[in-house]
Length: 312
Image (cartoon, rainbow, N blue to C red; front, side, top):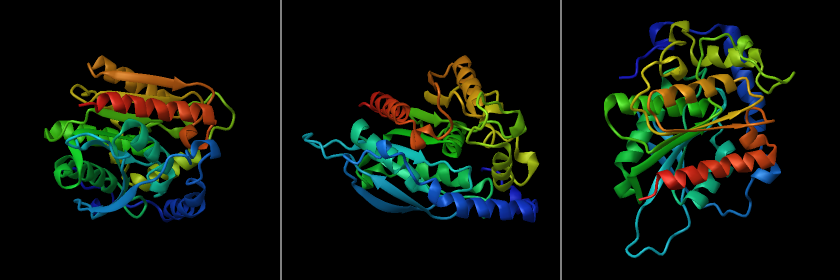
């Protein structure tokens, strides 16, 4: 079982931190859903439906993106990709990844499940990790009734969603349940123990500031004892063997670049197949806010890597 901490053990974040986190939800909720005009892929049609998936931390709404129908005879169920959006574990806007989900469904030929997981401070750790794992396990087990192939499954996400991806893969390995063919980690926060002020960026004003990173951390993990938990800080774990193949994307100007680079090296050293790409001249969130050329290149890398990993 994923351990219950935070409010379950009486640990609560300060009133000030809670107010700050709620303020970020209100102020950034709309902004974070805006995508660079050249990354919207308006030429790609949208075929979606909604599912409610039961989990140990409450039901979760998921948006299902379907690829264009094929002419296979007999028809072969498409593989499936489970996506977790970013937002510092605080901003719950899965629609920010609509462009990525549409692109991957169309170009990788897979069903995409975009997960609207619970966010802090209302639902601190481990609510999101519980929901992320339970949804992915449900997707793996229920393909036959939903017209996808749960045995050909991958999982990925951006920022906080990439952290949840690492947690899902670790939990699946430890429980011996399903085996993702690929994990995509885009600009992942992987070390919650380190002071955000020590996380370096070569530019003067990177997108992520130490102040906002501390607010995110306090909201998601109100109990500091959880900072080193392997589902909170996968980059601090030393038992990485047996994890799924990984595509690790980092951005040169991102404060999270170093921990992403280090995790890619650690996975490789543990015998995990890793494709690691550092995108130069860009900051955190570039797959959404641009520059468009780098954003398109990164999203195409996700789709092409998925296409290969999920092939029959």
